[in-house]
Amino acid sequence: MTFKVRLTRDAEADLDRLFDFLLERELPREGGDLALPTQAIAALRSGIATLKTSPFTCRKAGQSPFLRELIIPFGRSGYVALFEIEDEANVAVLAVRHQLEDDYH
Image (cartoon, rainbow, N blue to C red; front, top):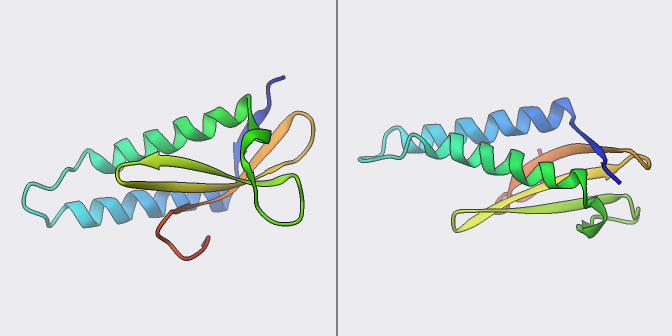
């Protein structure tokens, strides 16, 4: 079975925020890697795409068996995507955060 995966507006805003954070961090650094933000977003989108075939393999996030978290490795840490399996055909990504952030925004 294949699921349709969509990102909510909040999740898209999180991707923009994470991109901007990496870009702002790398710009002033001597030898900063300006490709890093693009690589991070590509890793996030690639990780999120795995939800098309295996959303139930991800860890539960709360009381509902349909609210789950996907760990997306990148660099020395990674990201966490909060998503909900809405029905037998649809998954909605609700939020994305860096693993070192306290919580979702």
